[in-house]
Length: 291
View 1 (cartoon, rainbow, N blue to C red):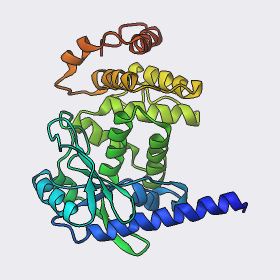
View 2: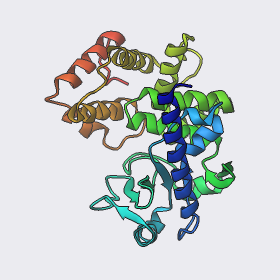
View 3: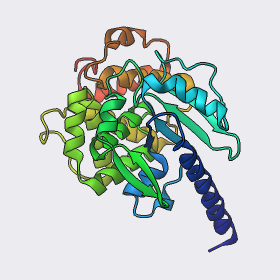
View 4: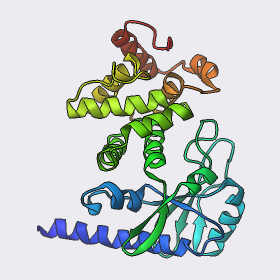
């Protein structure tokens, strides 16, 4: 191993141990919590857990316990980086562990508040316990964990690294159908199908179309547009464009979005948004709003 590679490996080992220290510290917290993604996901589904690096620690708590958690963290070595909790528009508060510098995202939902998602009691009731370096940690079960990766992909514009997580997840648990059924029940069918269509395009496998009743040409067309964005190396580079594209994804893909009509008519003024809609219109042979 080259010196530079060895140094990078040692830095990652040290950062990983710092995250484990934070996870252990959280065991003294005021209420139940679930570890999301990060070291737990790497431990569960990656052949080599060290292959999947993580920059922070994410945990999910019951929204009713949020004030207790914020107070406890502030008194136990964590610095609050968020000016307010914004429980009606956001789903997390950022803290930093003073001793290690590890960021901690304190979530009270796995999706934004206006989007459909299971609440903490259901996720806690169906939880799974794993061990990370001998430390027991509660995580989402195979079905809800996969569903959360679908939600996370949508929130982060189908980033390749998140879809890679999902690909490893379904390879390990062989539960693509379970995830699709959960997504259908929660109103996320189109998002889940788009995720799996992109993965199929990357793998060179046939489309979902015709195999599942919830799949349609929209998901395949959007998957192709997203893949083109990746290959161009210009994936939604500025925040205003990201916001516009996220709105498009919210409107086009969520099955039961209460903001659907409002968002549709608010998508004006962005050239990139208009270009994306035009490309979808050509790929589909119709207006993409007609879903």
